[in-house]
Length: 101
Image (cartoon, rainbow, N blue to C red):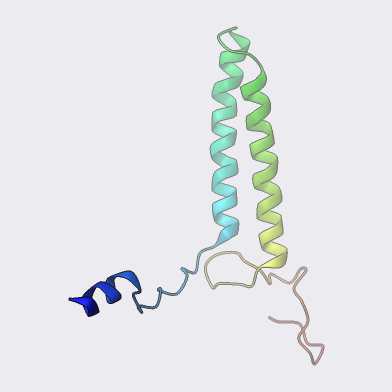
């Protein structure tokens, strides 16, 4: 019984490897959702149903999503899914000075 408690309290199972996702696609999807919400909030603000604050929040969400997409394009390695890292711009050179393809 003591061994079972020890295994339950201190499992030795290794975690699975992280998923290979396209962070740029995730950031662009978030920006698109903020843009859609911004249109809805804009209509509501124009009709006087709400203040302009939600519109401002959605604009900031779109801008941050686009900044995140650009950051991921420049700084993260390519995952083989859609757009990512290297793309020919901002990719780091290897020790021999060759740029990745």
